[in-house]
Length: 299
Image (cartoon, rainbow, N blue to C red; front, side, top):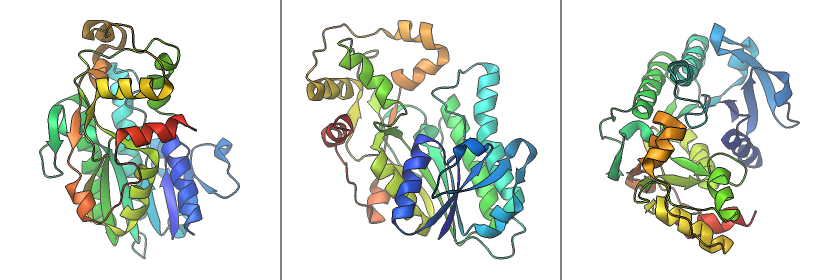
């Protein structure tokens, strides 16, 4: 298919694009700037602030994958930062809706990424039918998905899916290099009490889920089936890197002092039940943390 990706220039989008191309799909990105140029990827201009998409993109696309949105971990949770996180997600989807709702032929597929933070915190596995949480990441995911549902009702793609993605672990970027670097330097330590759940997935599995979801319908949790916590993640990285963990845990109050409300991203967490994903027939390449970390740290 001709797959149009919003947010394609990010870490996940670049890896996903490469995989889609190897599978024989054509890929294009919606881009605000020309510096995103890639020899195998077509660029179409868009400006969600003005609800604009280059008309040719609307006729070209047969499927859409939406990854667009300001990073919830990198953007400060000030009042303006929270507004930017929310606006960057909702306006992007609203722009897609406004521009594709009058298209003559329905899209073959639409897949929208959401977050595992939808459920809020809890040390048990949430299912797709569980209610949303009450904290800021949950609010962001809920409003994001509300916009996706509006897209579905107005644009009526043949296949429509929402993927609630957990933290993507990759050597190329995202959270993982920041987690691993202190351990490489000999300054590794648990965060808080170390018992908080970590909801994670290897980037290869994340991309393969997004690829396969072009033929799916519904909401799916995207997380590795193996449950773990902050202590296990830290100690596993240290073992693979052959580095000792000699420092005491970083206390929660210190993290809150540095990160403010964003500290909840590392001090709290949840797990995702992936029974629905497995029943869909998806096969994980990296179902366990040790295998995933070994591959990432070898690249």
